Length: 450
Image 1 (tube, rainbow, N blue to C red):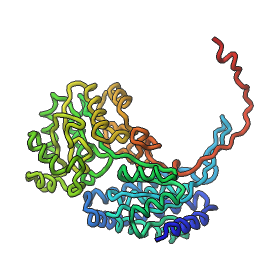
Image 2 (cartoon, rainbow, N blue to C red):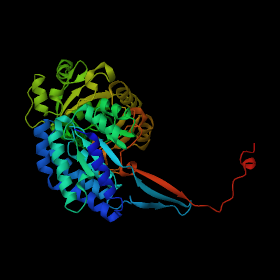
Image 3 (cartoon, rainbow, N blue to C red):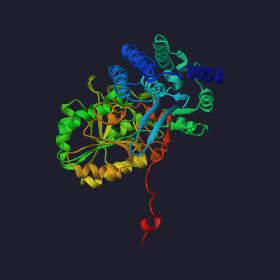
Image 4 (tube, rainbow, N blue to C red):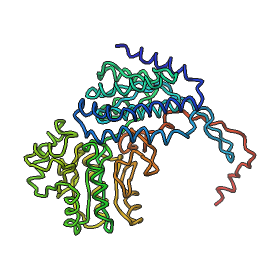
């Protein structure tokens, strides 16, 4: 296959929409959102069947929530031509598209990642070419073809979005080198390749969010939100809760609440170690059990749990590299560790991210103490701190002020250039018209007078 052919078609489509106004662009954004929303169940079924990752009902929710959240956020934003003016400074902002964008998408989100990438990109008059994960190529291709058909039906060029027909490392690398910008959502190796391509790139880092349960917070609420965070899509969300740190004296009550809400707990060291042997091989996640149902993982470890079990909890006696289970599990598993003081909990959360992965990504806290929330957020090295809500809300639904995103960057901690959610504004060049101001230039001698 000739990668340049894809790029040439993309540049032709790019040229065809160069004179589109804001209304025309927004119709394209809307059409893409609607077609995925309308086909949410079909695409969810295909994703689970093809990849053997995740949970069907949760993927339906992803495929409906994402287009709704993205469109609700994008619909009123200016992204074409003059997009802002500051009367005080005289600065006028002008949007210019980046061009043809290479989008590397993961098997964990074969529908919503290409959709979100496209909605953000085309909002700024850009074109995208998708390089899908080989494991999810069929589902991602179907998603892209649905979007192509939908935008073509309203008169837009279908080549505003394309997908590679042959997925190889060489083709992905060639695509990244040939385009104007890259959004790389996937493993660390792929992100590193994007940064090494010579093309400007937005990458993401791996997740492994710790969550601190503070004293005085309602246990039932904390457990309910934790189950959502841990179990959603069988734990393959990069921003899903992987570790909960809790006050030592609340262990009995907390564990009882977990069990009341359907979580199966394992507290014996030998039992916990059995899960470690199944979930990791030579320190790396065992692909055979990534994204599998909790009962399947339990059976592999030698245990039988109710078929309805959504989440498994494992009691730990250490954090960080001392136990492989402190790494990102990519399954419906949460490790549980007690603490004595809040300061100790914060230190353990940081240690776990530094030693076991996830630095820069996301952390959570359940607390009613503003001083504790501030203390935690000022110290933990992450782009997003989720307060009193499931950590997967890091993607920015309407329940908080974060921008909707399918690519969550991790700042310099995670070797990313961006510290935050990749947004449409990052995919356009915003130039500034500077008008002269009738102001008096400061007197340096007076300003720096001793």
